[in-house]
Amino acid sequence: MGPDIEELRKNYESFDDDKIIRVATEEATSLRPEALELLKQIIKERGLSPNVTKGVDAQFKQTDEKTLNEYCDLLRKLPCPVCNGEFEKLNATITATVISFLVMTNYRKEFKIACPDCLDKLNKNATIKSALMGWWGFPWGLIRTPKALMFNNKMKKEHRNPEANDIFRTFVLQRVGRIEANRHNKDGLIDIIQFIR
Image 1 (tube, rainbow, N blue to C red):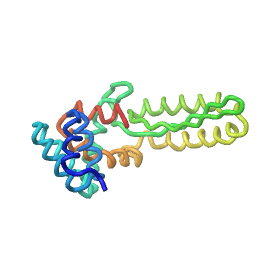
Image 2: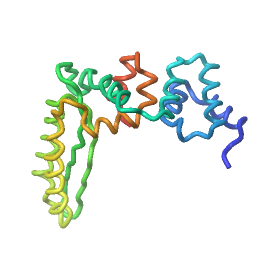
Image 3: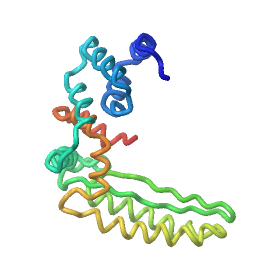
Image 4: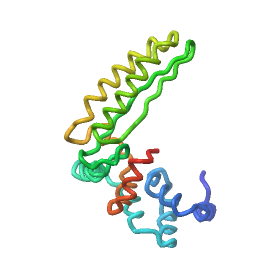
C-alpha cells in the first residue's frame, strides 16, 4: 500500500514547480486516482498554467489519428535541434554504433530528432565509426558491427518520409501530456525535442 493523502501532499509540496509539471505531464497515468486529484489540486493552488491540467487529461484520452497527426505536425515544424534550420520538417531516427577494443565491444543505440539532412549526417557518422572501430573486438565486434551497419542502412531510408515516420510517431505518443501542456508554448515544445529523456 502506498502513502496516505497527507504523506502525498507533503511529498508534492516539497517538489518545485518544474517537478510538479513533469510528474503531471509525463507520469499521470501511473498515479492512483486520489494522488492524481491531489496533484491537480496542487497545480491550482500554485497557480500553474491550466495547460498543465490539460496535459494530465490528454494522457488518459485515447489519442486518435487526427490528434496524433496534429501533435506530430506541431513538433515537426520546429527548428532542427542540431542545425537550427527551419527548411524541412523534422523526423526521428535511431543510430547504432559499435566500438571494439580486443575483448571489449560497446554496442550503443541512440535516438535523435532532426531535419533529414542532419539525420543523414548522424547516421553517416555512426556508420563510419562502426565500420572503422567496430570490428576489433572478438567475438562480439565481428557479430555486432554488421548488425549495426545493416540497422543504420535501414534507418536511413526513413529520414526523408514526407509524413512522420513510425519512430517519431511513437515518440509523440509517449509524450502527449507534455505536448498538450505546451501546445501554445514554442519554447516548451522545443524542450521536448531537444532534451529527450
